[in-house]
Length: 283
Image (cartoon, rainbow, N blue to C red):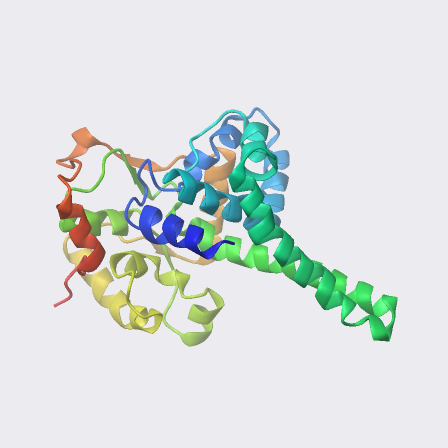
């Protein structure tokens, strides 16, 4: 993955457009073709597993580069093969060349060629064994990261938004009701989930050290319950199931539309305040 692309895709677009049209990680829209496809459900589940095992290659790296280049996310498309061609294989696209030259080729060359060849003095069987171990490890790390990252903002109990937040107060509420936590509170559980089980706190305080989330989480939840703001927290397995239901079209996300409240696009500098100041003051 190209670091400047990830920084723009995640730290700028995703964090300050969470659940909005310009959120580059809006699962429901990315899966529009897949959700509407008239395919057998077992086939959709099988393809979802393939995605989970390969998603850093097939989705995340190409999507971050596209977000950096176009300053937006992929638009929903009924032409899934066309999107794959445009993002990964089109030789006429400079972004695709950068993807291969900066991301794919160096990663594959080092991880799956040079490292296995270091074991050549032990024989070709050792080389093959290391290669297969690396491939298996790649699949498992893809699956693990998919399960702890992809469900963070997906589910039939998570909101998406028609308009941009109009200030810090709306920003804070949007981050809470547009995110989901997993069970948390102990070091083994938090470490195994990459501290992504504190997704709500992460979106409220994106610059905060991760170990602080454990301290803040009970206070954030208490404030949400006090003011009637939905605070979603379940096991990671329950959230994965809800993610898969969104992907295959079994369920849909909740919508907060402009006529549901007083949400209006910000005038300009007001939205920038949310980037530098705490979204929710804990007292």
